[in-house]
Length: 98
Image 1: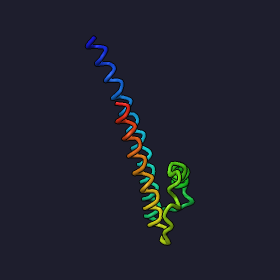
Image 2: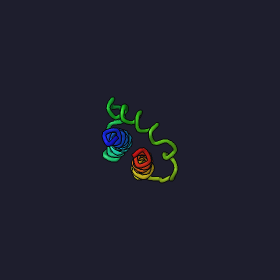
Image 3: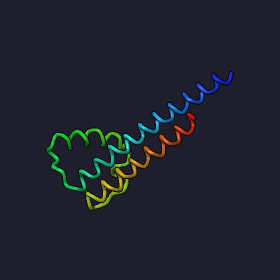
Image 4: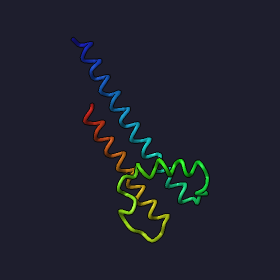
């Protein structure tokens, strides 16, 4: 009986770690995109286009949420909120799974 209980709790914590890792990966993609934009990376570069093609769908409804005239600040605020969103949501889901 005790062994079965150990495996059940072990499985739940593994799922929680995977969920938390996915949220951290999504947030990292958003942060890399923010850094590329703020540091002025070449938008024609294949790597920059690849990161942008992943970051924009992951940002969900956040781009344009706060209309800010400065493009760098706009990306920082809107995509930064998306990164925080992924960390919070996946953290809550991971806590529920545990």
